[in-house]
Image 1 (tube, one colour):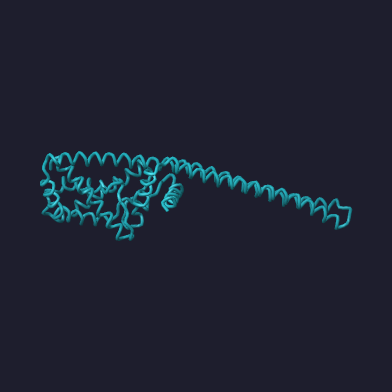
Image 2 (image 1 turned 45 degrees about the vertical axis):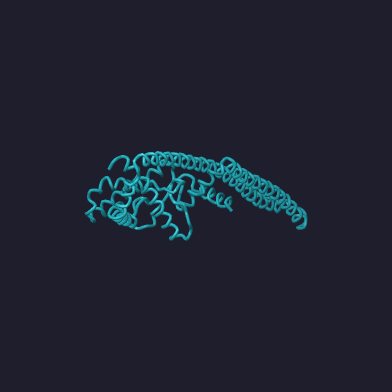
Length: 305
């Protein structure tokens, strides 16, 4: 297999893998979703997978058992390494098989590993013959030009997507920090109101005991004094509640301003890429800013409407 053929196989199987992902997700969810990490109609992990399979197992195309088990191991290893690398670099889990039996870290599971083994057998035994014939049919000079265009496209798409993912992570970090500050402020205000109410109860109890001990007047005078004390405490509580509501309104305004700033900082193209990634990977989880990711998902969906 020459380098020229390797690049063509990578490109073709990346596209065919994307087609398979789209069909699978459409049948499964009933919605047409642009699957894949990149924006274009390609899933490079399928291209890498088939190139590795062809390089290692291509000479054993007549041995179905070896194709099946070897393909299962090679593709599962690639999926495992790919999922781990994406999580390591972007702090994000893009797919999750944790609910599947016999999974490893949620990256791979027996069910899909067996499916990859079947796909490798079908691809090597039947599909690859047509792909190989197509590559050899293309005139070499034209093939080189087309490959240059395709590789330039792959590179540009990768750069744009990675930048969009990095922006998502920066926005998530900003949102998480702001949300944490808002929670701290809210907790402090709520705690202050609770402490004020507790002090008011304690003060009223002390006043009652003190008045009972020192009272020289009638019971009516005692109740009047107690009522006056209670009203003063209630006024203080009302003032504190008003301050609390004002602070909460300010925090809500801050959250809305944060949302507006987040939208303003993201171009329309970047928001479209972010929305596509979130739709393509519905199980995407950010290990550091999970709550912020849910907010971004909701904002993007609302903006789309």
